[in-house]
Image (cartoon, one colour):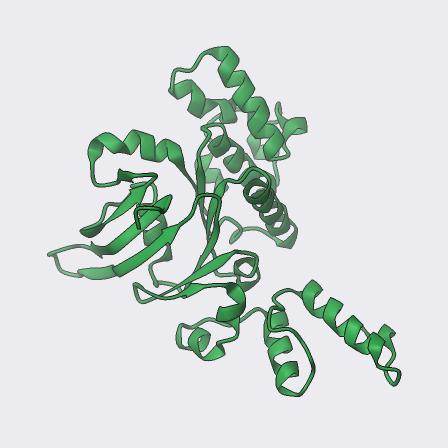
Length: 291
């Protein structure tokens, strides 16, 4: 585990420890994240996803085991400032993360609190607004923004602190489909273009399908860690955890069972349509315009 950017070793966390209503939220979690990786964390409500997310920038501390962030142990108080600069959190409700009167003032808030020189703050604000696609909205009051724009503002505020990792706790849960697409495109661009490590907590299987790896939590335990295609080929595991595969992956699985020569790597609607077009195009008895 020493080679990982983020290393989780036998992590255990208990709410109301030693009191009435004690609840084990995480139990024996072992996992690692490489720098620049994209991990999706999924699970039913109450599975421990948000509790795990809050351990990754030391908002919560283990009752047993440990979490290491870039070689720093979250249990050591002297490490907390560096850990929280390294790992930025994006929460579900962007309104809870807005503190200033304009977009650019909100983005500047974090660097200003670090006491950075004004010219350095200005450069960070410009870079963060560009990365989040908000350059043209810099003087707009945040309450005039759409839900997706507000969430991109939260991302820009995090980027101004120059983190190595973004932990996003269901950032699209309160957005409409257009807003969800905005945020996903922004996060994918940051991960693939800027090489920022991305950990996405989500209940949307279509979002999890975009990750390099998926972690599945069930009742506080990590029951799966691997590629999305491997996970979605195991519907019995998903069902046992109260989850469903993405519709395109499930349709492709059923078509394969019926004899269609489809790849097991199909995860998205675009993947499925492209393969069906190729199959129908090769068959002189079928019209490829059927799809």
